[in-house]
Length: 215
Length: 54
Image 1 (cartoon, one colour):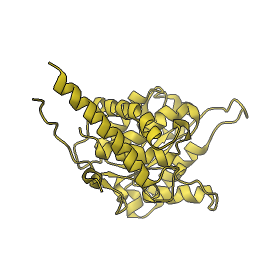
Image 2 (cartoon, one colour; image 1 turned 180 degrees about the horizontal axis):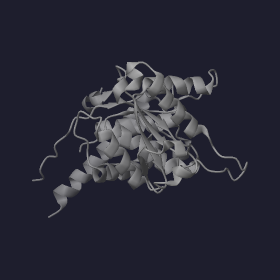
Image 3 (cartoon, each protein chain N blue to C red; image 1 turned 60 degrees about the horizontal axis):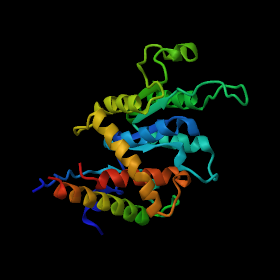
């Protein structure tokens, strides 16, 4: 085994306090923000968890989401795609629903669950007041659909829960660009096209890249 | 002579599902090899450029 690979801790499992539930859309338009979010979470020393971890249909989806929420002390909820679908004309409620479950676990759970904390993101700072006014009083960070702004918000928030010094948002942004420029070559080495990457593949590549890269 | 870059040890913890061997299109061992190969090649190129620059 290559010496530097020892820095990647695949076992034991990450602790409750370091796991972050990622509640966000999974559509193509959101992908640049999603990848930046996953990368930033890893670079800050936390473990992202999201519903994309599952690809089998053996278990009811909500059960899997509940299990992940229970295993994560932290949660990042992006409500920026709470809008009417152009196809159905109906709003998308998955993200607000999962945010509600997270709040419920914090309010009614045991001591461990009550230590939960979350960051709520939207594309504009006050847009939520028009569709989720009960959230009034919570700090909402806006990312304006820009990965750089999202990186800054997530980094700033995770910094309060880290025992270590976290790189600045500029440094994380540069690393992210660096990783993205290496990703096509990593895919080529893996005999994959970039569009074929699964979430698990992306997570592995990003984690291994961060662990093995010299900074 | 170019100053040797200090290596910072990183500990990146992946979720259990990403650490499992059977998941994903790329096996974990293959992903490690691919990432290592790209980073090594990049470091070698960077090192070569810093040695040849005046």
